[in-house]
Image 1 (cartoon, helix red, strand yellow):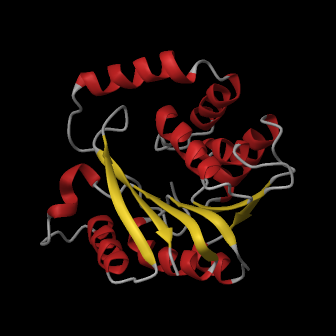
Image 2 (cartoon, rainbow, N blue to C red):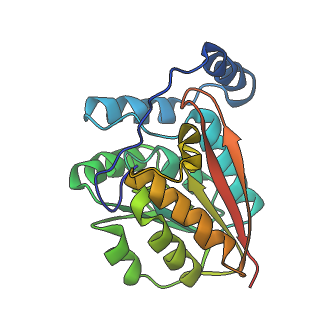
Length: 231
């Protein structure tokens, strides 16, 4: 997803077909059919948005993490067409709210329509513009932050997330394994260098307790960084 510049997630390695089959099994057994989310993906495709949404299983994971955190105020950096936004907004209790940031005005228009069709516009505010500039104008605290935007800006987004959260808040960052390219310390790919810089920033930050969960599935091999603000 994109919120700061137009860098997309690359998918260079052929996936093991079993990854997608297992995702299908998870969907059939645990997620079921969801007409709103299916329509959201269809609207994104019709609108020409890139196919870089989280998978259904990952979207449900985000929903559950937000519920486990008992989040009443959620910040999302990188809206795209609103798929993850809908899953996160559904986790909010009555009176809860979500602010989501997106660079591309066309993506914002698609996302707002999808969110409206999901009946969630009263809970969600979609802001358009470069995320770093928008973040600087926001006030906290947020209970849960999901970062899924341009990777070169990950450290900036992390710093803003720390400014805008409280002790006990949850921060989740997507696309941090990058098909193993994370290990390439000689890479000149800004998505890789931005992700490696994120790891360095998290490791040096005493206010965070963090780990990474690697993932495989229809979105290939990647991972989520999970962190709790401890001080």
